Length: 74
Image (cartoon, helix red, strand yellow):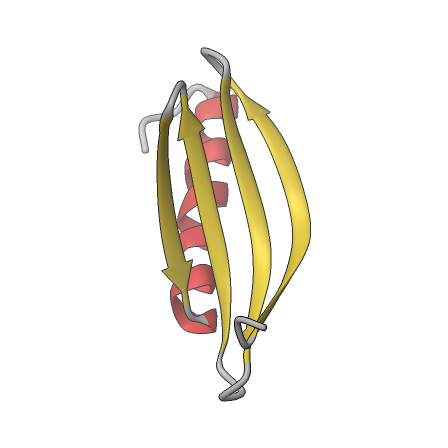
C-alpha cells in the first residue's frame, strides 16, 4: 500500500481537448492536500495544494470568471 488515499472530487473537460481532475489526497501521516491534475495531450502536470493555497487559488479563479463574464478587466 502506498500510504495515500485518493478521492476524485471533479473531472472537468477544458477547451482544446484538455482535462482537469481534482482529487482529495489523504496521506498516512495525516496530511491532506488537493491534487490538481491537468492533462494536455500526452503531458500531465500535477499540483498539490494545501487548504490555504487551494482557497486562494479558488477565490482568484472565481474572481476572474466573474469579471470575464461581466466583460470587465481582471
